[in-house]
Image (cartoon, rainbow, N blue to C red; front, side, top):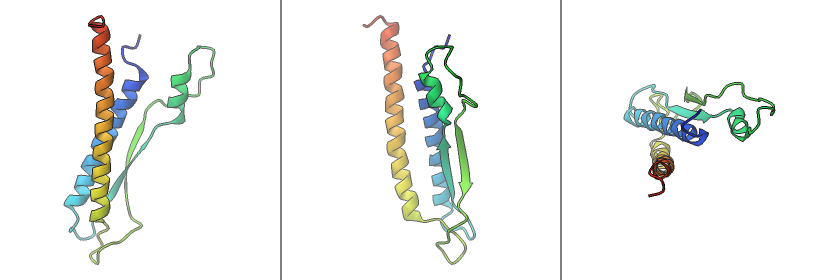
Length: 127
């Protein structure tokens, strides 16, 4: 028996992604003047099977799941060059990504907080 729904697990993965992205963006900004530094990006891809698995309500349904884990990948940007010293960090792009990630994190944190408050209400018997 699972105590938490798949939603809470998905939100946990989203928080991990946002945290990793925050660290990566901060690392890029910190190295904006470092010669030959190549900026990094974070990608978050959940398998389609995760969504399909959440819809599976009967054991007779076909199992499409190959892997239920979300993948968070950090990739180096090698295809751009912004500075004469070989550095490719675009500070404006990084600052915009930082603001966007903050909004994303706040939304996910608010949603998971709401889920836990709902569980707390159920445990207390609606009081």
